[in-house]
Each structure stands twice: as structure tokens, then as C-alpha cells.
Image 1: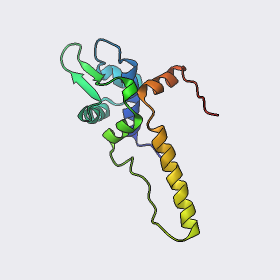
Image 2: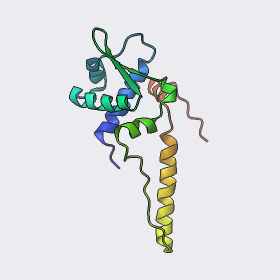
Image 3: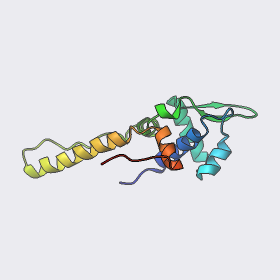
Image 4: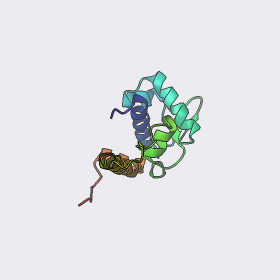
Length: 140
């Protein structure tokens, strides 16, 4: 599976904005683009979609830029993916069949979809903690 560039860029932009969530001034487009090595022209389109989804806000003028509209702990990866590419979260569905081989494959895809849905509930505060090395995985 290959992750589309717009999804990768959107997640990276949201991570960068999450890191600046407590700043008193918005993050300028050029600083965001430079920090995450995202082409400005592409970033403007992505931020527009995130803004339309209510995840990002912007201000104009001197000191203007972009900011999160909610705390990073309340924004999930799934929300970002849905904002940028609404079709990416569609579940893989196989036709119902009486063939054992098709049931087997269908069951594998169902489990994969469940695991993906679970992982995409991760929020940006948790992702930022992982990025900064504060994350501890307690899975046994």
C-alpha cells in the first residue's frame, strides 16, 4: 500500500502545527513548509482542505499564519485523512461467498480494516509525544 503524498503532507503539517499549539502567534506558511519540506503550493491546497474541515484556522496580515482550531489531543489521524481524501478510509469489502478461500481472504481484510481503524484513532498529542521520544508502548 502506498500512502498518497497529500496524506503524508497533511499529517506532517498537522504534527508541525501540534508542536506549536501553545504558541501565541500562528505559524507562517513558509515556516511550516520549510520545517516539513513540503512544497508551498501543495501545502496551501492541503491547508485549505484542513481549514474547510475545521481542523485548522488562519489569520492574515503581519504575524498571520496557521493554527489548530482544537487541542492536538482532540484531533485524530482519521479526521485528517477524511479531510484530505474522503475515499481513503473506505473499507475494502469483498463479496460474500460460500467458497472457503474467499471467506478466508475476506476475514483477513476485515481484521486489517479493524486494525487500521484502531490505529487511525491516535491523536496528534500522542503522535507528537512519540516524535519527541516521550511515548512508551505498553502492549504485551
